[in-house]
Length: 120
Image (cartoon, rainbow, N blue to C red; front, side):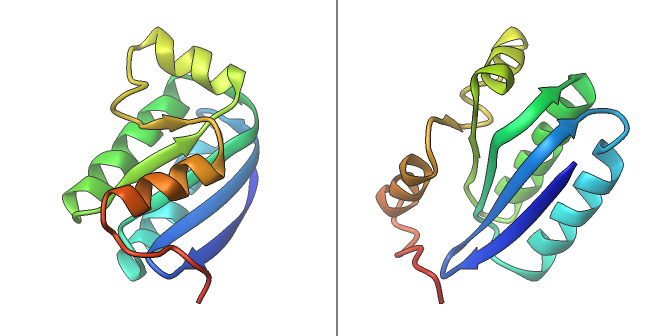
């Protein structure tokens, strides 16, 4: 798995590609947790570039969602058909706040009253 990070005014966006599976999950959780502890608790994970996600990957998303929510943040996943299908199999699409686009996720942050997520 590869990725990049963008810190906006009141959220953090991660753009990820590759495989989110048992092999990549430990490092994925460690890196995202570090950013969460140091920055905004509002997280958007853009998984549109993910080719495969397994149960370990879904478990990691749940763990990060709970962590973000525990810090008072909003957790959202920008999904693709593969990710959506896997998440829907375990009925977690609402809990993981699946979105169709990054713009939809940013709009949701504005609706929640978390400020304007513009680049600082």
